Image (cartoon, rainbow, N blue to C red; front, side):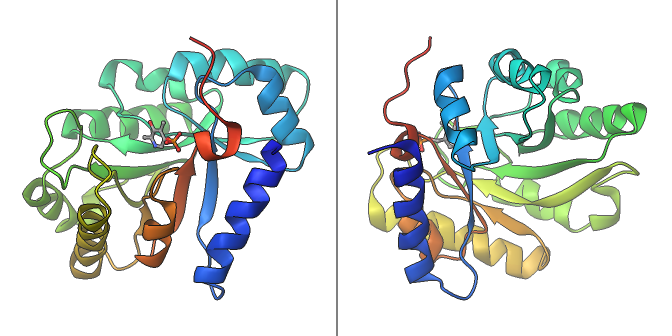
Length: 223
Ligand SMILES: *Cc1c(COP(=O)(O)O)cnc(C)c1O
């Protein structure tokens, strides 16, 4: 199946589950070739996600040079030292996972005078392999919503990932947990949750943004 056929099939599936307001799909192009991304854009897809800033900048600057339109979100954990490199091509990050990262993102957004959105990454599975705020850290941050953003930097929502083993019941619990945290502390926040293996569960649990790579592009290639 082509990239567009995969995208359409997934769009159809999620529209069946939530016809009133299906989540948006961020097409994750990490480790996919420029040719594959161009094919996706040629078929009308506009919203992409990359987790490595350098890789995203290399590929998408070529597209920008060709005057091709796209919207690019950063989806992995944000390291304070690389925040500066986000401002050429990215417009949002789903991976703010430390107070120092958040501080730097606000500082650089205001310095570049460029509107930038962010999601706070939350580790609700407790796995050491995952970045993100704990539930306690997150609730502390959300209790002071005024200090979350800055002039050019907007708090958009909460991001999480399901357990690495993909257990469906655990995955659903994690997504449900994030939704409960939203209800309690940040009712206007959007939820970024759901990937290739769990986007149907995420849709059922109220996700606003799915981040889907391999189910659209096939296996990752470029090293
Ligand atoms: C790679 C990645 C995805 C997409 O993963 P797939 O399983 O290919 O859909 C989503 N979110 C993050 C943070 C990722 O790093």
